[in-house]
Length: 116
Image 1 (tube, rainbow, N blue to C red):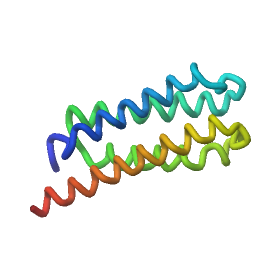
Image 2 (cartoon, rainbow, N blue to C red):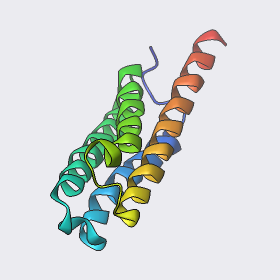
Image 3 (spheres, rainbow, N blue to C red):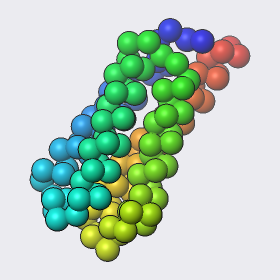
Image 4 (tube, helix red, strand yellow):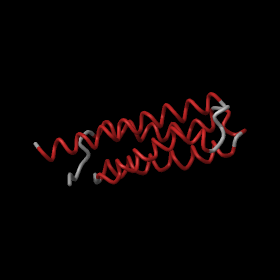
């Protein structure tokens, strides 16, 4: 297992995306939908915590958690019933997609570093 993230800049981006998701609840129309608000708070906090842990002591589990969080953000608007709120839907989908792709990239980079 690596002791540091293969690419720390990707972790910083994920940390920023998680914080942006939490901040988006204050800037956009999230307040009208409590499910979307709570989902953004919890998911964004999980992403920030995982990225912070990965910056200090890397582990594959952190990336897998972010892949799961990103995947959840992709389907949450439909599962929790706020897909009709277009701005909130797209914030969830785009941040979820970005987080999942970045975490997956870290996992691939980690595997490549182990075999090199």
